Length: 518
Image 1: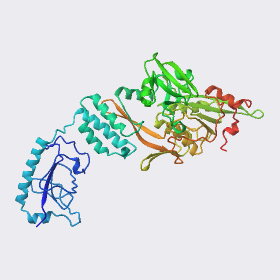
Image 2 (image 1 turned 120 degrees about the vertical axis):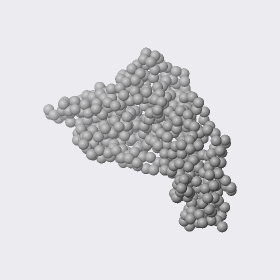
Image 3 (image 1 turned 180 degrees about the vertical axis):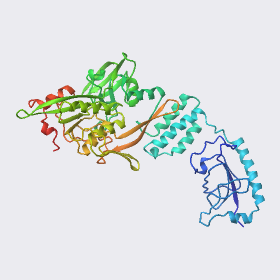
Image 4 (image 1 turned 60 degrees about the vertical axis):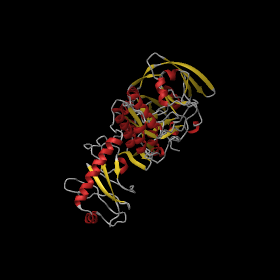
Protein backbone atom coordinates (compact mmCIF):
# COMPACT_ATOMS: atom_id res chain seq x y z
CA UNK A 1 0.00 0.00 0.00
CA UNK A 2 1.37 3.43 -0.83
CA UNK A 3 1.38 5.99 1.97
CA UNK A 4 -1.53 8.39 2.37
CA UNK A 5 -1.66 11.16 -0.21
CA UNK A 6 -2.54 14.83 -0.25
CA UNK A 7 -3.76 16.66 -3.31
CA UNK A 8 -2.76 20.28 -3.91
CA UNK A 9 -4.19 22.62 -6.54
CA UNK A 10 -2.38 25.85 -7.36
CA UNK A 11 -3.37 28.50 -9.86
CA UNK A 12 -0.73 30.32 -11.89
CA UNK A 13 -2.89 31.47 -14.77
CA UNK A 14 -4.31 34.94 -15.28
CA UNK A 15 -7.21 33.29 -17.14
CA UNK A 16 -8.36 31.17 -14.21
CA UNK A 17 -10.48 31.96 -11.19
CA UNK A 18 -7.31 33.27 -9.58
CA UNK A 19 -6.74 35.99 -12.18
CA UNK A 20 -5.99 38.53 -9.47
CA UNK A 21 -2.68 36.86 -8.69
CA UNK A 22 0.24 38.82 -10.24
CA UNK A 23 1.59 37.14 -13.41
CA UNK A 24 4.81 35.16 -13.38
CA UNK A 25 7.96 36.65 -14.82
CA UNK A 26 10.17 33.61 -14.29
CA UNK A 27 9.93 29.94 -15.17
CA UNK A 28 10.01 28.80 -11.56
CA UNK A 29 8.35 30.00 -8.40
CA UNK A 30 8.08 28.78 -4.84
CA UNK A 31 4.80 27.40 -3.54
CA UNK A 32 4.58 30.37 -1.17
CA UNK A 33 4.56 32.74 -4.18
CA UNK A 34 1.05 31.65 -5.19
CA UNK A 35 -2.22 32.03 -3.33
CA UNK A 36 -4.59 30.43 -2.61
CA UNK A 37 -3.34 26.89 -1.90
CA UNK A 38 -5.77 24.23 -0.69
CA UNK A 39 -4.50 21.06 0.96
CA UNK A 40 -6.84 18.21 1.77
CA UNK A 41 -6.10 15.56 4.35
CA UNK A 42 -3.07 15.81 6.63
CA UNK A 43 -0.80 18.85 6.55
CA UNK A 44 1.85 19.37 3.87
CA UNK A 45 5.51 18.88 4.69
CA UNK A 46 8.58 20.12 2.76
CA UNK A 47 6.80 20.70 -0.53
CA UNK A 48 8.60 22.59 -3.30
CA UNK A 49 6.32 23.32 -6.25
CA UNK A 50 7.50 24.74 -9.58
CA UNK A 51 4.91 25.91 -12.11
CA UNK A 52 5.15 27.09 -15.70
CA UNK A 53 1.58 27.93 -16.76
CA UNK A 54 -2.15 27.21 -16.39
CA UNK A 55 -3.63 25.19 -13.47
CA UNK A 56 -1.50 22.49 -11.91
CA UNK A 57 -2.08 19.47 -9.75
CA UNK A 58 0.38 17.54 -7.68
CA UNK A 59 -0.14 14.34 -5.78
CA UNK A 60 2.18 14.66 -2.82
CA UNK A 61 3.16 11.88 -0.43
CA UNK A 62 3.46 12.87 3.22
CA UNK A 63 6.99 11.52 3.40
CA UNK A 64 8.26 14.72 1.76
CA UNK A 65 8.47 14.60 -2.00
CA UNK A 66 9.13 17.52 -4.34
CA UNK A 67 7.39 18.32 -7.59
CA UNK A 68 9.11 17.88 -10.95
CA UNK A 69 7.85 18.22 -14.54
CA UNK A 70 5.69 15.16 -15.40
CA UNK A 71 3.10 13.95 -17.83
CA UNK A 72 -0.60 14.73 -18.06
CA UNK A 73 -2.89 13.43 -15.34
CA UNK A 74 -5.40 12.62 -18.08
CA UNK A 75 -6.12 13.67 -21.62
CA UNK A 76 -8.07 16.80 -20.79
CA UNK A 77 -6.00 18.18 -17.95
CA UNK A 78 -2.39 19.18 -18.52
CA UNK A 79 0.00 18.92 -15.59
CA UNK A 80 3.54 20.20 -15.42
CA UNK A 81 4.08 18.95 -11.90
CA UNK A 82 4.80 15.44 -10.72
CA UNK A 83 6.50 13.56 -7.93
CA UNK A 84 10.02 12.63 -7.07
CA UNK A 85 11.18 10.98 -3.89
CA UNK A 86 13.65 12.89 -1.72
CA UNK A 87 15.63 9.65 -1.34
CA UNK A 88 16.28 9.61 -5.13
CA UNK A 89 14.06 6.58 -5.66
CA UNK A 90 12.77 8.15 -8.88
CA UNK A 91 9.39 9.22 -10.15
CA UNK A 92 6.43 7.65 -8.37
CA UNK A 93 3.75 8.23 -10.94
CA UNK A 94 4.01 4.79 -12.43
CA UNK A 95 3.75 3.16 -9.01
CA UNK A 96 0.87 5.36 -8.08
CA UNK A 97 -0.88 4.56 -11.32
CA UNK A 98 -0.78 0.87 -10.44
CA UNK A 99 -2.54 1.35 -7.10
CA UNK A 100 -5.16 3.98 -7.97
CA UNK A 101 -7.59 3.71 -10.94
CA UNK A 102 -7.38 6.52 -13.47
CA UNK A 103 -11.13 7.20 -13.14
CA UNK A 104 -10.71 7.73 -9.38
CA UNK A 105 -7.92 10.22 -10.01
CA UNK A 106 -10.08 12.15 -12.45
CA UNK A 107 -12.96 12.34 -9.98
CA UNK A 108 -10.72 13.50 -7.13
CA UNK A 109 -9.02 16.10 -9.30
CA UNK A 110 -12.35 17.52 -10.39
CA UNK A 111 -13.66 17.68 -6.81
CA UNK A 112 -10.54 19.40 -5.54
CA UNK A 113 -10.64 21.94 -8.37
CA UNK A 114 -14.23 22.88 -7.47
CA UNK A 115 -13.41 23.10 -3.76
CA UNK A 116 -10.29 25.15 -4.41
CA UNK A 117 -12.12 27.67 -6.60
CA UNK A 118 -14.87 27.92 -3.99
CA UNK A 119 -12.31 28.47 -1.24
CA UNK A 120 -10.59 31.19 -3.27
CA UNK A 121 -13.81 33.06 -3.96
CA UNK A 122 -15.23 32.86 -0.45
CA UNK A 123 -12.22 33.01 1.84
CA UNK A 124 -9.40 34.87 0.07
CA UNK A 125 -9.33 38.70 0.01
CA UNK A 126 -9.06 40.35 -3.39
CA UNK A 127 -5.51 40.53 -4.76
CA UNK A 128 -6.39 42.84 -7.66
CA UNK A 129 -3.58 45.36 -8.07
CA UNK A 130 -4.60 48.99 -8.21
CA UNK A 131 -2.76 51.67 -10.15
CA UNK A 132 -1.15 52.78 -6.87
CA UNK A 133 -0.03 49.21 -6.10
CA UNK A 134 1.55 48.98 -9.54
CA UNK A 135 3.52 52.20 -9.02
CA UNK A 136 4.79 50.89 -5.68
CA UNK A 137 5.78 47.59 -7.32
CA UNK A 138 7.58 49.52 -10.07
CA UNK A 139 9.68 51.25 -7.41
CA UNK A 140 10.24 47.98 -5.53
CA UNK A 141 11.35 46.23 -8.71
CA UNK A 142 13.79 49.04 -9.55
CA UNK A 143 15.50 48.62 -6.19
CA UNK A 144 15.42 44.84 -6.50
CA UNK A 145 17.26 44.95 -9.82
CA UNK A 146 19.61 47.91 -9.36
CA UNK A 147 20.53 48.32 -5.69
CA UNK A 148 24.15 47.57 -4.82
CA UNK A 149 23.45 45.60 -1.62
CA UNK A 150 21.64 42.40 -2.55
CA UNK A 151 21.11 41.69 1.16
CA UNK A 152 18.99 44.86 1.25
CA UNK A 153 20.34 45.89 4.64
CA UNK A 154 19.72 42.43 6.10
CA UNK A 155 16.03 42.06 5.25
CA UNK A 156 13.94 39.72 3.12
CA UNK A 157 13.14 42.01 0.21
CA UNK A 158 10.36 39.78 -1.18
CA UNK A 159 8.67 39.53 2.19
CA UNK A 160 8.83 43.31 2.54
CA UNK A 161 6.94 43.64 -0.77
CA UNK A 162 4.22 41.24 0.37
CA UNK A 163 3.82 42.91 3.77
CA UNK A 164 3.72 46.38 2.24
CA UNK A 165 1.03 45.45 -0.28
CA UNK A 166 -1.06 43.97 2.53
CA UNK A 167 -0.48 46.60 5.21
CA UNK A 168 0.55 49.95 3.73
CA UNK A 169 -2.30 52.25 2.69
CA UNK A 170 -2.06 53.11 -1.02
CA UNK A 171 -5.38 54.73 -1.75
CA UNK A 172 -3.93 57.91 -3.21
CA UNK A 173 -0.74 59.03 -4.93
CA UNK A 174 0.41 60.78 -1.77
CA UNK A 175 -0.01 57.58 0.28
CA UNK A 176 1.88 55.61 -2.37
CA UNK A 177 4.77 58.07 -2.25
CA UNK A 178 4.86 57.71 1.53
CA UNK A 179 4.94 53.91 1.18
CA UNK A 180 7.84 54.13 -1.31
CA UNK A 181 9.79 56.46 0.98
CA UNK A 182 9.17 54.16 3.91
CA UNK A 183 10.48 51.23 1.86
CA UNK A 184 13.65 53.11 0.90
CA UNK A 185 14.25 54.15 4.51
CA UNK A 186 14.69 50.48 5.46
CA UNK A 187 17.88 50.42 3.35
CA UNK A 188 19.54 52.99 5.65
CA UNK A 189 21.25 54.61 2.67
CA UNK A 190 21.03 58.43 2.56
CA UNK A 191 21.93 58.50 -1.15
CA UNK A 192 19.07 56.23 -2.25
CA UNK A 193 15.94 58.34 -2.26
CA UNK A 194 12.58 59.00 -3.87
CA UNK A 195 12.02 62.04 -6.09
CA UNK A 196 8.57 63.49 -6.65
CA UNK A 197 7.98 64.56 -10.29
CA UNK A 198 9.07 68.17 -9.69
CA UNK A 199 12.19 67.11 -7.78
CA UNK A 200 13.05 64.61 -10.48
CA UNK A 201 12.74 67.32 -13.11
CA UNK A 202 14.85 69.68 -10.98
CA UNK A 203 17.57 67.06 -10.52
CA UNK A 204 17.81 66.52 -14.27
CA UNK A 205 18.10 70.25 -14.90
CA UNK A 206 20.81 70.48 -12.23
CA UNK A 207 23.09 68.24 -14.30
CA UNK A 208 22.57 70.29 -17.43
CA UNK A 209 23.21 74.00 -17.94
CA UNK A 210 21.79 76.14 -15.13
CA UNK A 211 19.76 76.22 -11.91
CA UNK A 212 18.42 78.88 -9.55
CA UNK A 213 19.87 78.95 -6.05
CA UNK A 214 22.87 80.20 -4.07
CA UNK A 215 25.63 78.14 -5.67
CA UNK A 216 26.42 75.62 -2.92
CA UNK A 217 27.37 71.96 -3.14
CA UNK A 218 26.78 70.23 0.19
CA UNK A 219 27.44 66.83 1.72
CA UNK A 220 27.36 64.84 4.93
CA UNK A 221 30.25 65.04 7.40
CA UNK A 222 32.82 62.39 6.53
CA UNK A 223 36.25 61.17 7.62
CA UNK A 224 37.62 63.35 10.40
CA UNK A 225 34.38 65.37 10.36
CA UNK A 226 32.14 62.41 11.26
CA UNK A 227 31.27 63.88 14.66
CA UNK A 228 30.22 67.20 13.12
CA UNK A 229 26.52 68.04 13.23
CA UNK A 230 24.90 69.81 10.32
CA UNK A 231 25.76 69.68 6.63
CA UNK A 232 29.20 70.38 5.21
CA UNK A 233 29.91 72.75 2.33
CA UNK A 234 31.78 70.82 -0.35
CA UNK A 235 32.18 73.68 -2.80
CA UNK A 236 30.79 77.00 -3.99
CA UNK A 237 30.04 77.96 -7.59
CA UNK A 238 32.35 80.64 -9.00
CA UNK A 239 30.58 84.00 -8.98
CA UNK A 240 27.54 82.65 -7.12
CA UNK A 241 25.90 84.21 -4.04
CA UNK A 242 27.61 81.79 -1.61
CA UNK A 243 31.04 82.50 -3.10
CA UNK A 244 30.45 86.25 -2.89
CA UNK A 245 29.39 85.90 0.76
CA UNK A 246 32.72 84.27 1.66
CA UNK A 247 31.42 80.73 2.33
CA UNK A 248 34.30 78.24 2.11
CA UNK A 249 34.74 74.50 1.58
CA UNK A 250 34.52 72.80 4.97
CA UNK A 251 32.16 75.36 6.48
CA UNK A 252 29.13 73.81 8.20
CA UNK A 253 25.53 74.84 7.56
CA UNK A 254 23.73 74.82 10.90
CA UNK A 255 20.37 76.32 9.91
CA UNK A 256 18.46 77.11 6.73
CA UNK A 257 15.70 79.66 7.34
CA UNK A 258 15.70 78.79 11.08
CA UNK A 259 15.37 75.06 10.30
CA UNK A 260 18.13 73.02 11.94
CA UNK A 261 20.14 70.81 9.58
CA UNK A 262 21.02 68.25 12.29
CA UNK A 263 18.63 65.62 10.92
CA UNK A 264 18.10 67.16 7.48
CA UNK A 265 19.09 65.19 4.39
CA UNK A 266 21.24 66.86 1.76
CA UNK A 267 18.31 66.62 -0.65
CA UNK A 268 15.90 68.39 1.70
CA UNK A 269 18.58 71.04 2.18
CA UNK A 270 19.06 71.42 -1.57
CA UNK A 271 15.30 71.95 -1.98
CA UNK A 272 15.39 74.68 0.65
CA UNK A 273 18.43 76.38 -0.89
CA UNK A 274 16.87 76.53 -4.35
CA UNK A 275 13.95 78.78 -5.11
CA UNK A 276 12.67 81.59 -7.30
CA UNK A 277 15.25 84.01 -8.65
CA UNK A 278 15.45 87.11 -6.43
CA UNK A 279 14.09 85.40 -3.29
CA UNK A 280 16.14 85.33 -0.06
CA UNK A 281 17.33 82.43 2.06
CA UNK A 282 18.79 82.84 5.58
CA UNK A 283 21.77 80.66 6.53
CA UNK A 284 23.59 80.08 9.81
CA UNK A 285 27.15 79.01 9.03
CA UNK A 286 29.91 77.67 11.28
CA UNK A 287 33.27 78.71 9.81
CA UNK A 288 36.09 77.66 12.11
CA UNK A 289 35.43 79.28 15.49
CA UNK A 290 32.97 81.79 13.99
CA UNK A 291 29.19 81.55 13.68
CA UNK A 292 27.84 83.66 10.83
CA UNK A 293 24.27 84.57 9.92
CA UNK A 294 23.98 85.33 6.22
CA UNK A 295 21.17 86.44 3.92
CA UNK A 296 21.69 85.22 0.36
CA UNK A 297 19.65 86.25 -2.67
CA UNK A 298 19.01 83.41 -5.07
CA UNK A 299 20.32 83.81 -8.60
CA UNK A 300 20.36 81.80 -11.78
CA UNK A 301 23.64 79.90 -11.57
CA UNK A 302 25.26 79.24 -14.92
CA UNK A 303 26.99 75.87 -14.91
CA UNK A 304 29.85 76.65 -17.26
CA UNK A 305 32.09 73.71 -16.40
CA UNK A 306 35.47 74.92 -17.67
CA UNK A 307 37.69 77.98 -17.39
CA UNK A 308 41.18 78.05 -18.83
CA UNK A 309 44.27 80.25 -19.29
CA UNK A 310 47.98 79.83 -19.81
CA UNK A 311 50.87 80.98 -17.64
CA UNK A 312 54.22 81.91 -19.17
CA UNK A 313 57.07 80.75 -16.93
CA UNK A 314 60.44 82.53 -17.36
CA UNK A 315 63.38 80.22 -17.97
CA UNK A 316 67.13 80.55 -18.17
CA UNK A 317 68.44 82.88 -20.86
CA UNK A 318 65.83 83.57 -23.46
CA UNK A 319 64.01 80.31 -22.81
CA UNK A 320 60.53 80.18 -21.31
CA UNK A 321 57.71 77.69 -21.07
CA UNK A 322 53.96 77.89 -21.00
CA UNK A 323 51.69 75.97 -18.63
CA UNK A 324 48.06 75.48 -19.60
CA UNK A 325 45.67 75.85 -16.65
CA UNK A 326 42.19 74.25 -16.79
CA UNK A 327 39.65 74.72 -14.01
CA UNK A 328 36.91 72.05 -14.12
CA UNK A 329 34.04 72.99 -11.81
CA UNK A 330 31.41 70.30 -12.48
CA UNK A 331 30.68 67.21 -14.55
CA UNK A 332 27.56 68.26 -16.41
CA UNK A 333 26.61 67.09 -19.88
CA UNK A 334 28.92 69.64 -21.54
CA UNK A 335 32.01 68.92 -19.45
CA UNK A 336 34.00 66.57 -21.69
CA UNK A 337 33.41 68.66 -24.81
CA UNK A 338 34.43 71.81 -22.91
CA UNK A 339 37.66 70.19 -21.69
CA UNK A 340 38.58 69.15 -25.23
CA UNK A 341 37.94 72.67 -26.49
CA UNK A 342 40.09 74.13 -23.71
CA UNK A 343 42.99 71.79 -24.50
CA UNK A 344 42.87 72.65 -28.20
CA UNK A 345 42.73 76.40 -27.47
CA UNK A 346 45.71 76.18 -25.10
CA UNK A 347 47.73 74.20 -27.62
CA UNK A 348 47.29 77.01 -30.10
CA UNK A 349 49.25 79.07 -27.56
CA UNK A 350 52.12 76.55 -27.57
CA UNK A 351 51.74 75.23 -24.04
CA UNK A 352 54.03 72.37 -23.00
CA UNK A 353 52.33 71.14 -19.79
CA UNK A 354 48.95 71.22 -18.04
CA UNK A 355 47.50 71.92 -14.60
CA UNK A 356 44.01 70.45 -14.12
CA UNK A 357 42.27 72.04 -11.12
CA UNK A 358 39.59 69.81 -9.54
CA UNK A 359 39.41 71.69 -6.24
CA UNK A 360 35.83 72.24 -5.05
CA UNK A 361 34.47 70.09 -7.88
CA UNK A 362 31.71 68.09 -6.18
CA UNK A 363 31.11 65.76 -9.11
CA UNK A 364 28.16 65.26 -11.41
CA UNK A 365 27.58 62.84 -14.25
CA UNK A 366 29.60 59.62 -14.01
CA UNK A 367 29.88 59.11 -17.81
CA UNK A 368 31.42 62.55 -18.18
CA UNK A 369 34.09 61.65 -15.63
CA UNK A 370 34.94 58.55 -17.69
CA UNK A 371 35.11 60.50 -20.95
CA UNK A 372 37.40 63.14 -19.46
CA UNK A 373 39.74 60.45 -18.10
CA UNK A 374 40.00 59.03 -21.63
CA UNK A 375 41.19 62.43 -22.87
CA UNK A 376 44.28 62.24 -20.65
CA UNK A 377 45.12 58.52 -20.75
CA UNK A 378 46.69 56.55 -23.59
CA UNK A 379 45.61 53.24 -22.00
CA UNK A 380 44.69 51.64 -18.70
CA UNK A 381 41.89 51.04 -16.22
CA UNK A 382 39.88 54.11 -15.21
CA UNK A 383 37.70 52.65 -12.47
CA UNK A 384 36.40 49.34 -11.14
CA UNK A 385 32.67 49.14 -10.45
CA UNK A 386 31.99 46.83 -7.51
CA UNK A 387 29.06 45.37 -5.63
CA UNK A 388 28.79 43.14 -2.57
CA UNK A 389 30.33 40.25 -4.53
CA UNK A 390 33.32 42.17 -5.85
CA UNK A 391 34.22 43.69 -9.22
CA UNK A 392 31.30 43.53 -11.65
CA UNK A 393 32.48 45.95 -14.34
CA UNK A 394 35.65 47.65 -15.52
CA UNK A 395 35.90 50.98 -17.32
CA UNK A 396 39.15 51.33 -19.20
CA UNK A 397 40.59 52.97 -22.31
CA UNK A 398 42.69 51.85 -25.23
CA UNK A 399 43.85 55.37 -26.06
CA UNK A 400 41.58 55.86 -29.07
CA UNK A 401 39.98 58.92 -27.43
CA UNK A 402 43.21 60.35 -26.01
CA UNK A 403 43.82 64.02 -26.78
CA UNK A 404 46.47 65.02 -24.23
CA UNK A 405 48.21 61.84 -23.13
CA UNK A 406 51.86 62.97 -23.35
CA UNK A 407 52.34 66.43 -21.83
CA UNK A 408 53.29 66.63 -18.12
CA UNK A 409 50.14 66.94 -15.99
CA UNK A 410 49.45 68.15 -12.45
CA UNK A 411 46.04 67.73 -10.77
CA UNK A 412 44.96 69.96 -7.87
CA UNK A 413 42.53 68.47 -5.31
CA UNK A 414 41.06 69.36 -1.93
CA UNK A 415 38.30 68.22 0.44
CA UNK A 416 35.75 69.73 -1.94
CA UNK A 417 36.83 67.26 -4.67
CA UNK A 418 34.13 64.59 -4.65
CA UNK A 419 32.43 61.78 -6.54
CA UNK A 420 33.14 61.89 -10.31
CA UNK A 421 36.12 64.19 -9.79
CA UNK A 422 37.58 61.62 -7.36
CA UNK A 423 37.20 58.94 -10.04
CA UNK A 424 39.13 61.15 -12.45
CA UNK A 425 41.84 62.07 -9.92
CA UNK A 426 42.25 58.44 -8.82
CA UNK A 427 42.56 57.22 -12.41
CA UNK A 428 45.21 59.80 -13.31
CA UNK A 429 47.19 59.11 -10.13
CA UNK A 430 47.11 55.30 -10.20
CA UNK A 431 48.03 55.19 -13.90
CA UNK A 432 50.98 57.49 -13.11
CA UNK A 433 49.67 59.97 -15.63
CA UNK A 434 49.57 62.91 -13.23
CA UNK A 435 51.06 64.22 -10.00
CA UNK A 436 48.43 65.20 -7.42
CA UNK A 437 48.82 68.27 -5.20
CA UNK A 438 46.55 69.40 -2.38
CA UNK A 439 44.72 67.60 0.43
CA UNK A 440 42.73 64.34 0.69
CA UNK A 441 39.48 64.48 -1.25
CA UNK A 442 35.96 64.21 0.14
CA UNK A 443 35.57 60.42 -0.05
CA UNK A 444 32.28 59.67 -1.83
CA UNK A 445 32.96 56.20 -3.20
CA UNK A 446 29.42 55.22 -4.20
CA UNK A 447 27.66 55.64 -7.50
CA UNK A 448 23.99 56.52 -7.94
CA UNK A 449 21.85 56.11 -11.02
CA UNK A 450 18.56 57.92 -11.55
CA UNK A 451 15.51 55.94 -12.71
CA UNK A 452 12.28 57.52 -13.93
CA UNK A 453 9.00 55.93 -12.85
CA UNK A 454 5.89 55.80 -15.01
CA UNK A 455 4.17 58.78 -13.35
CA UNK A 456 7.13 61.16 -13.82
CA UNK A 457 8.60 60.62 -10.35
CA UNK A 458 11.95 58.92 -9.95
CA UNK A 459 14.45 57.08 -7.80
CA UNK A 460 18.09 57.88 -7.19
CA UNK A 461 19.60 54.50 -6.37
CA UNK A 462 23.04 53.51 -5.14
CA UNK A 463 23.94 50.99 -7.83
CA UNK A 464 27.61 50.37 -7.06
CA UNK A 465 30.71 51.42 -5.23
CA UNK A 466 33.91 52.07 -7.06
CA UNK A 467 37.58 51.37 -6.62
CA UNK A 468 40.47 53.21 -8.23
CA UNK A 469 42.76 51.32 -10.67
CA UNK A 470 44.96 50.36 -7.68
CA UNK A 471 41.84 48.81 -6.03
CA UNK A 472 41.59 51.56 -3.43
CA UNK A 473 38.13 52.00 -1.91
CA UNK A 474 38.05 55.72 -1.23
CA UNK A 475 34.63 55.87 0.47
CA UNK A 476 34.89 58.18 3.51
CA UNK A 477 38.68 58.24 3.02
CA UNK A 478 39.27 60.09 -0.23
CA UNK A 479 42.10 60.13 -2.74
CA UNK A 480 45.38 61.03 -1.03
CA UNK A 481 47.55 63.45 -3.08
CA UNK A 482 51.26 63.03 -3.71
CA UNK A 483 52.20 66.44 -2.28
CA UNK A 484 50.56 69.22 -0.28
CA UNK A 485 50.03 72.68 -1.71
CA UNK A 486 51.42 75.74 0.06
CA UNK A 487 48.85 77.05 2.52
CA UNK A 488 48.73 80.38 0.66
CA UNK A 489 48.15 78.79 -2.74
CA UNK A 490 45.16 80.66 -4.23
CA UNK A 491 41.82 79.19 -5.19
CA UNK A 492 41.20 82.15 -7.45
CA UNK A 493 41.97 80.89 -10.92
CA UNK A 494 43.50 84.13 -12.11
CA UNK A 495 46.07 84.40 -9.31
CA UNK A 496 47.61 81.02 -9.95
CA UNK A 497 50.15 82.24 -12.50
CA UNK A 498 51.92 84.39 -9.91
CA UNK A 499 52.60 81.26 -7.83
CA UNK A 500 54.39 79.71 -10.82
CA UNK A 501 56.19 82.87 -11.99
CA UNK A 502 57.39 84.73 -8.89
CA UNK A 503 60.06 82.99 -6.74
CA UNK A 504 59.47 85.53 -3.95
CA UNK A 505 55.77 84.66 -3.63
CA UNK A 506 54.61 82.77 -0.52
CA UNK A 507 52.79 80.33 -2.78
CA UNK A 508 55.65 79.82 -5.24
CA UNK A 509 56.00 76.40 -6.83
CA UNK A 510 59.01 75.76 -9.02
CA UNK A 511 57.89 74.19 -12.28
CA UNK A 512 60.45 71.39 -11.99
CA UNK A 513 59.19 70.59 -8.48
CA UNK A 514 55.58 70.91 -9.59
CA UNK A 515 55.84 68.12 -12.16
CA UNK A 516 58.27 65.95 -10.19
CA UNK A 517 57.01 62.58 -8.94
CA UNK A 518 59.41 62.54 -5.98
